[in-house]
Image (cartoon, rainbow, N blue to C red; front, top):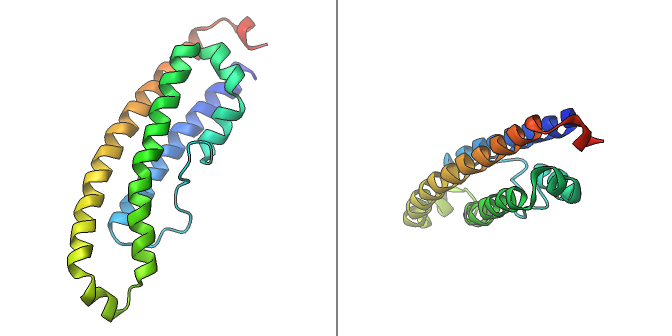
Amino acid sequence: MTRKEMLDAMAVARETHKRQMDKIKHIIKGELVEEPTALGKMECECGQWFYSNKDEMTKILGHQMFERLDKVHEKWHQDYSRVYEIYQAKQQRGSGIFAKVINKGKDNLEHDKLKLYYKELSELTDELMREADAAMRRITALPESKFL
């Protein structure tokens, strides 16, 4: 993998996780999300790339930096699973008038939880972006000979 390919892939991964946060905003608003975010760290778009290139990424980034990225990415998906569970439960309950009346108190509690989870995921996203930026700086700083 060339330096440019690695930097481009890291940039795509950053944008992908930002789009996932936008999806979560839609979930909080009670909107239908066509393709919810993958639950597992290896199932999402950036995870598929990141983990399929693990050996090369570890060689370029170093074991510690790779592990930091992996740890934050995994935590993000673990925390996201709480959002997903609420979203799925709401989808299964339905949205008819009767369901809305019966579930009003539950919906308010879930909405508060979603806002809290969103805040926590925002903080993890910021941490993930910092780690990705550090990785991109390292990739940029390395000599071209490391990428052949």
